[in-house]
Length: 254
Image 1: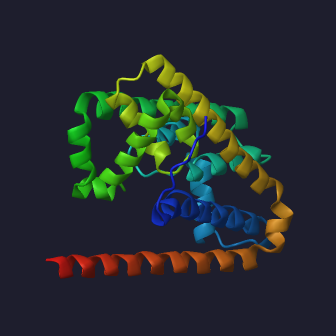
Image 2 (image 1 turned 180 degrees about the vertical axis):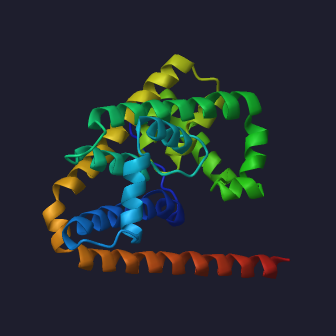
Image 3 (image 1 turned 90 degrees about the vertical axis):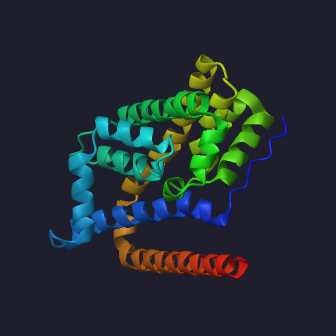
């Protein structure tokens, strides 16, 4: 089967990957720098690390991943890698394999909600209208994203619920067209569970590697940190300029 992956727009890829990874790397850099440079307890990095260590458990992992796999903009990159990073520490209270398991269970729960509630119960017309509403926009939804997900599902069928777990944007919405078409639920659950599990393994590897590179990241933490902050500033500028351009175009079209 010759599969042509859907190419999301640049800003969607930024939201789905770059910003979450930026946050995660800032978290790991700050956490590692704290152990060697004795950062003040009230620093931002210290607060972020402390929050993750205090609040990250199997229950929160399941809930956050369920939200990530539904329509809520909770990137899995901000859940699994930090959880595995904590599990890799000597004083970590989590188990890496259980992190992956509960993250996958959460993903299946969120996808199931999309499948039954949004796809089968509410239906296509209601969901498309909601996607273009103000609330839908706040949740980073759009009819265009739903249309791409539906086209992807219609083209590749049941297999799309597995492949889609590795594709930005598609990953969050592929369960909705599966509900539209009333795909066999056991098959949907199996493909979703396997796909989500493999994706979580990739994210877990990222967190494990970040912990394993502690000395390197400590050595270049300042340089990497400054570079990521510059990237963050550029991304903010990009979104501001994009918003201004869109606003002017709307005013001109009126």
